[in-house]
Image 1 (cartoon, one colour):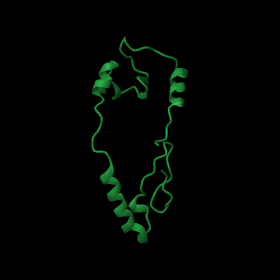
Image 2 (image 1 turned 90 degrees about the horizontal axis):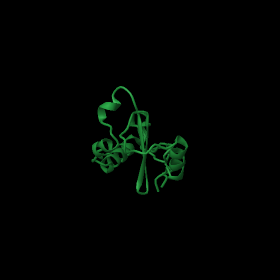
Image 3 (image 1 turned 90 degrees about the vertical axis):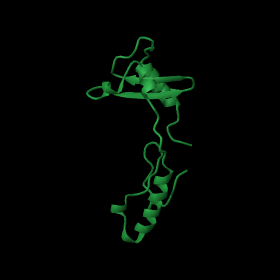
Image 4 (image 1 turned 60 degrees about the horizontal axis):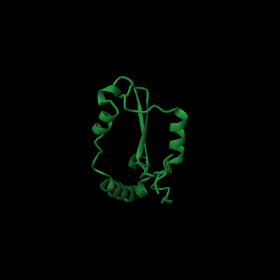
Length: 113
């Protein structure tokens, strides 16, 4: 769902997500309306964060691996999950080509429905 009121909402980002505009950049005549919208928006944001420790442990990584080097992209597709990283992972992970990862990422829709 895309909101069309550009006075209050930003343009969709690359994932199709829109957010309320910042109050500091809003015109004075819509600040009250924008403040109410921001309060409503904030109240609906998820309060729980997923615990990624079990996932990282499964692939042989921990949070400290990312402090000085390394990145991680995780993509879940069906009963499999793909990860792209430049860090060494555990032996039970199966290495695939970058083109296979990119094909799986391209097959998964990016925009939420």
